[in-house]
Image 1 (spheres, one colour):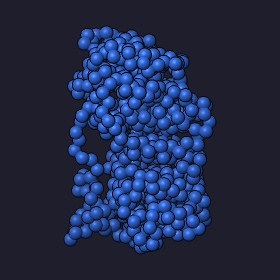
Image 2 (tube, each protein chain N blue to C red):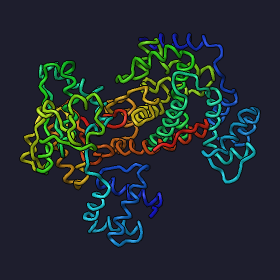
Image 3 (cartoon, rainbow over the protein chains, first blue to last red):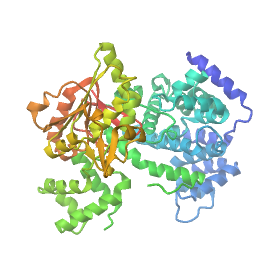
Image 4 (cartoon, rainbow over the protein chains, first blue to last red):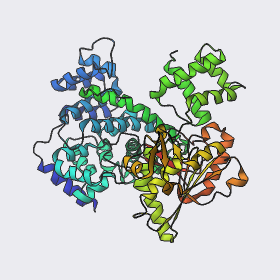
Length: 302
Length: 275
């Protein structure tokens, strides 16, 4: 199917939804501000204080077990200093996304969605470091938001999406292919429409649109390739939407891998096996992170 | 004795580098108790002293004792479920399609460290289920090899205990396993698909005759070999595998640094190697 057709269909779907949550304007402004060099923490704090809901959420998150400060942090400025410039983006964006998509009403379990998202964020950061990509936090954020389109499908196309999930159960099928085949568009195009509506910075829009086909990216093919691989690896190491998607790939044949190897040839020596096993170990931390954000209590796991 | 996270990582990294097996963080307590045992046996007081011993001239000998403590030689049916799922869902249908096109309807599987036969027989059961569908009119050949004649005799006999059969899905168990006085007897229908032979993986003269396999399993054996031996044995597996075939090692094992020609193919819960 032609890419324009996919985009057109995605735009129709997104336009049809009247009650789509909005990302606070402040969050996207923070992202833009942090993309500028020489931004001062004061500026960011002043901007964020204009949104009391976000301020409250950040204070709640910073005092949660994820960050475990020694003493309770009570002011936004203190919180931002504690986080450091690099982590502000992450917190501003994730707190807004969580408030936008915190209700567990869709076809995908929300905690499995966030586990996948944070897992891909973390894996993106590790891969970014290995290939010498300059902005590790950007890679992290890009990983967290890459599948926003899936939340849309899961929430607003619940019935069709459920049918699709059933049709690929235990099949060697990628969600993106099944979506194009059955819905006429995919989470990549839908996510892009959402990101544009929310005025996300260009790099993130590109990752959302091209994380399954990084070679097609015009400005950030490397970032797209990083997220592409992080996504593939997470899907085979237990961060796979609770087994809804059955992914199988030959690393050597992945275009993301080729892009990154061209950029940094030493990647050919990477201990891929160990990377997989380390992702398994990280699963425990990722689940703890998601649990503490959403306050999920699980029965104790082995 | 509790060991610190840092000591755990040091020893874990060392075992990974030398043996090619990864200990998951969740297994820290297990490694801790086994390390304590070896430290008592060697009279060493701290983890660091023990680590120094592993790295010393006498280290390879001590490493053997440690590996005996931390690996279990017990095997059982349907042990590596992610591998079996990947074979059934994607890899076998792919091999069958390629061979169908060539008009060569024969599937060859090798369980290269077959022990008492559970892995080879597991494959036999799975493949037998497909004889009316995917593998209609196909010849199935499964070969099990091991260096130890006692376990080969056990494999040929096909009688198992409750531990061995506990993971067999009900559907297979009903068809192929008969219980008699606490023993579990494998059906002759399954046994006839598998042959067992004695083989030393290190024996070049014999290894070159193990040709044209579509799938090779070699789980939990290479971890006992040094890098030179591993490299040699894995090269044989490489040569003996069809261009479209797959080579599987055990859960948590790694061939990184052993053979740079194999490519990794990943699936949910594991990976395999391909030419």
